[in-house]
Image (cartoon, rainbow, N blue to C red; front, top):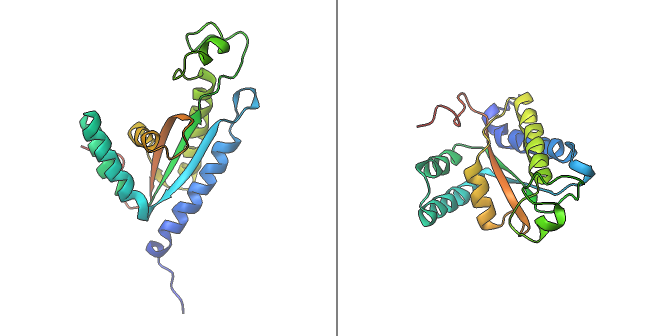
Length: 179
């Protein structure tokens, strides 16, 4: 008789869950139907590298203490889902919600994200974490991990906004009740 214990399937289960999150994010509604997302999964064996990079980033940028907390917290994860958006104005007329007169003016000011891109990213993140929730995979959306993903250019040179979502299956969600 073969027994398969939950612990031996956990990493694969979380990876498959992350793949379903990718589909949910990809198929989430996009402004004008334009998809500027970049999505990836980092598996457990590579999380220490990301944690170390976050600590290095925090020291170099003299960040708040929660960057160090999140770096340590990553080590409790079974996988990491990262998602970001490229900066490409959507050419919505009229708009100006980015603070510029129109998309042409926005394009003359690199580094100012299109509100439509940022909104699409938020909707995609919501879709992704809803899948994790349905699968009972604990997770937390982390801006800090997104910062280091941008710094490392993990999602590409043209991605300008990113978030990381560590994922865990354990008896207690390690991403809440943190000090």
